[in-house]
Image 1 (spheres, helix red, strand yellow):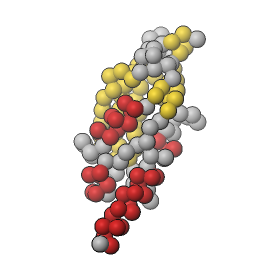
Image 2 (cartoon, helix red, strand yellow):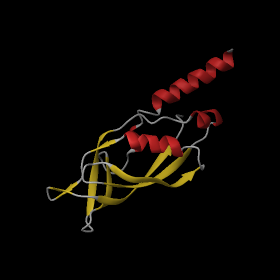
Image 3 (spheres, helix red, strand yellow):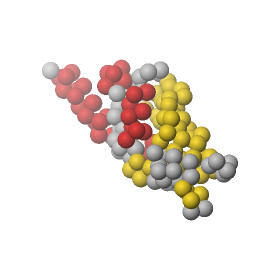
Image 4 (tube, helix red, strand yellow):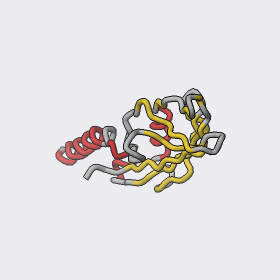
Length: 132
């Protein structure tokens, strides 16, 4: 009984702490991604809302940590295009959770000189770490 309660408390603590981690977006001082406009200029794509990050249950049971490197583009309407996993460690443990996290994220449409632009070549490394 005690071990079941302990496991439940650990899972609850991780569920509470992982989603509110602000260290997920360490690029710059704000919440943004950086990519390339068709002109070759660097453009920041700002994040309007960030959903909670869900730690996979299997990874919790295994006390596993890792990362997923995601690549994507953002169209003129602020929608992610061609979201894909470029690298993951360990493989196939955090991929689905990372993809769902990014699919639920809302972005502000990117602009350059007051005009909406398509932004490509965005990469982001999403770390999955258990609270200490």
